[in-house]
Image (cartoon, rainbow, N blue to C red; front, side, top):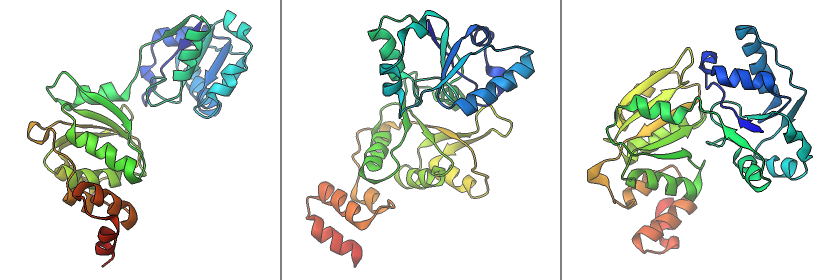
Length: 270
């Protein structure tokens, strides 16, 4: 039996009693990063006065998931096995999905244990009234793929939930303040941790708040939909305002306007 166990996203007390019980029964533990998992188990053991008797730790992440599982001895699953990602729910912007598929294909019993998830926490914190929303996950880092992602957020008929790293959070608020200045959003830093902080308002208002804020930490963001902006395509002005190399910007402008890439490239350089 394989249990996919969510781990706290910040506050250690968010681990469930059921998760602790399963970890005490576990013989083999697959984990995204063995160092992070061993540290977590040490903290949980001390806090809850528990003893974990895990015999085997196996590193299983997005780069090796298929190779490890395709070559595993299936007898390992005759005992209690669990999978933990570094924080939060496995398979949600974290490894684990191929492991679930593997269990289905090999007729291995598995169960997803409910628990901490930053996306649902953020949506419940938003106060947005729409009962529907879309989970986007992490935006592509740069280039055309990021433009497409931003356009999808802009045109979404329902609120959109996005994850972002501390290294790119400033870039994201700059982009959103240009594309969607009056769109309401909530930005949550370090959810459930000691220094959790929420920024609520329009994107342009949040951009101003960011000037005085400490932005270090992991972020989850909910961007509301706007009925007046539904279906709006990305405009020439939107693209001109984005921080992109001239060559990429020229290609996008050519697509939107029908003019040649060369003409736009020369205009951008002049």
